[in-house]
Length: 499
Image (tube, rainbow, N blue to C red):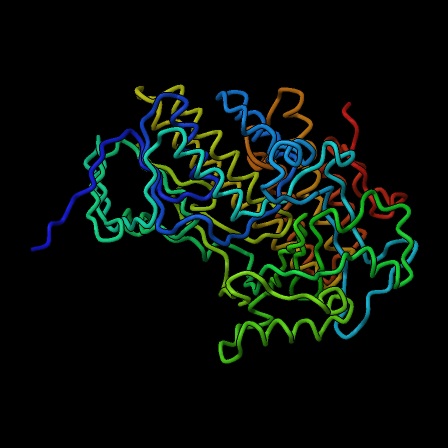
């Protein structure tokens, strides 16, 4: 005779997905007195990407640690403090963003005026630098903190039924062979798009509204050479670089795509090709490894960087996706919410994902803290949804315009200022105690209008590059703290000092 046990629980909040966003949501909800269960279909540690932090992400992480009395979290907001406090959790030094332009079949040739380069610093030096998150280890650490806080955390749990009874949700599924029955007042989807919640809730798919089209082939490697070494061999001097390219998120860009290179201190490097499938369709008849080799053959300088590289994730296998973009038409309701990466995903370009997740989480937890049992909570959630949708649209516009400019590096550099100008200004405003309402100032209609104009311009050969640059410079004249677009800087931008 088989006896089937039932795992049951009644909580305020059920959170689906134990990546860093879901685990932090559980910890913060617990700190404000809400009962929580955290659910995940997988098991830690597990391979994940989305590894590059930014100053804005670090600022939010630090503020969350202080506001909700999580002192152990604060060291992760800075490279130096992370290394000193958690030396066993791998990280990487991120001083900024590096972009290098390549042409098929040609070696990269540096010149004194940096015509094929863009470096934008995100810190003054290693002591205040950003971090690269080796997500398997970082996410696993946060999940352990959830358990240490006494929060129920069920791994290998599949939830396949969501029933909304107005004042309570009923979630049903199983953990391994054990049935699960959860009653919760509120549901958070922190799954990054892997949860059946959106389908069961009937949320509309609005992926067709996105301009960006990209797919990826990626893995973790050992043996990747620092780009700075190859740069010097090719004749580059780099004396006026604001930081070493190896101490950053490196972007190799080319007509129709780009490649990320993210080094960690333990010798592992995350790398992946992001390709426009309209230009470079997915051919499933060839393996990911064969496609990786094909793209290496197209760009000899990149091939030199990876000449001794060996994949080490997934048992040495490479992963490949179809189109990465997705967007849901609703991100919150009266008793549920999606974290940003569950509501939509655009592309890893410009490393916006982690900061966006943390800002969405900050907004959601504040609404719970201030209005949990009041009629204002549904109104707060409507505003959460509105801002999140505008932010997804703005990120999509920046990334799509950047892809359109990859063939002509000058045009790509111009449109990236929609990211860097708003990001740097937002960071300085938050440090001054005046955090903007939305990520990257995405609720400012001036910027949406200008971005749409820039997107059309970068795709229109009749619009000259100087005209495009003038449009961008006018748009950000009053918030351009980093001197972006100043030709005398030759696209080498140090991080601006506080004003």
